[in-house]
Length: 123
Image (cartoon, rainbow, N blue to C red):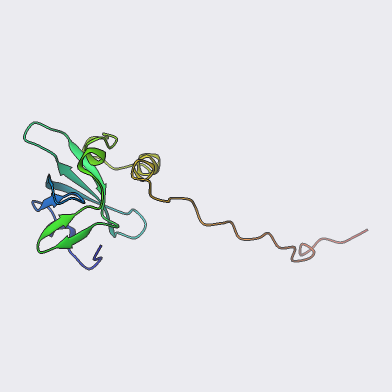
């Protein structure tokens, strides 16, 4: 997704699934805690429905509408965490898992032996 877009400009826009079927209207945008980059959109899926979270990456903003590369039924079945609250790292992992997106942490750096600890003496 374009990262230079103001997340406030997403609110109120229509969202469509991979087949072009309307999902609903964007109610809220959630930013990544570390980077401040828009990461999730909460989409109102109907007049009396709940909001469904969708990942903004790999979604695309096309001609003023958000196109989400997932089927509407998968989006509607996403875990419901309510809107207006912060998403915890565990909730984000659940959402990434629901959408089949890779969220494996980067591999740990190899542990190196850099020699003796300063100030220690060998006997």
